[in-house]
Length: 124
Image (cartoon, one colour):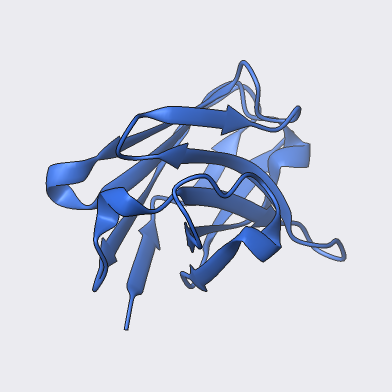
């Protein structure tokens, strides 16, 4: 089985930064897309960003574009999400996931394995 371990969440003031990490085990890391998603209280889970580790191709949703950066360290089987200029509306549980293919986009249906989530709280 594939296991994902997300970490790096916490409490930060608006305008601050956090870096989330997601370590993957049990799969050929670079063969599949890795995605970050988030779920705010009372809202549906939504895509944030994804990366194809083998090529470094990245994708960002509108909410993340220009503020967040996704990257991967294939040697460590780890994907990161650097989040800058955080806003209160970024408050959510952030999840990492392994895609069904190398290019899985931002749709939840494109991902088959999910981590447990890490909470990000941005205070105003």
